[in-house]
Amino acid sequence: MRKYHHLGIPTTEKREGEVHLKHLKIYVSGYKESLYHIEWMRYEPDAPYPELVKTMPHVAFEVDDLEQELKDKKVIIAPNSPSPGVTVAFIEDNGAPVEFLQSTRLRHKTPNHTLERDTRSARAPQCGGVRPTPQMR
Image (cartoon, rainbow, N blue to C red; front, side, top):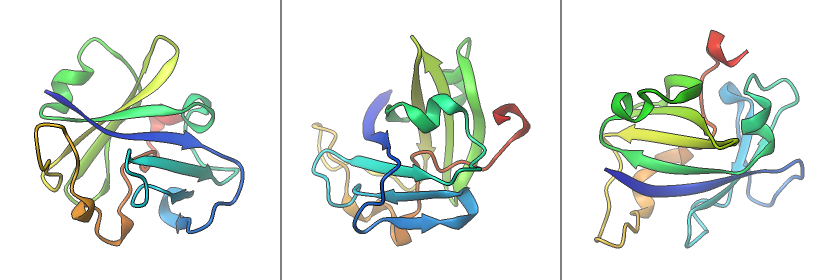
């Protein structure tokens, strides 16, 4: 099952309240404040992610079975764990990046798929928050 998680939007401008995730070479902001879970991402110049991810917005879905979601897809960022309890991967679909997250930490409140706000302690990123792998270069 896929459940909407967030919309990630790359930016080159500094944004109020952004948090620097030094180990991921990215600044993030907006997720906690956005009713629709819109997250802004500003990448460091040498961030080792595909240009598609660094320049195009992406939609992210929480999934039950990440391995199954990636089957027969064009994987552009291999599965990795940017924070404890979370595994993420990106695919390219119709020219656009799509992120999948599998987590034991994420919980939905109601059938309308509204996420609880406390699922990201200390702002542990999911969006674009990936550790570099050889497939990303």
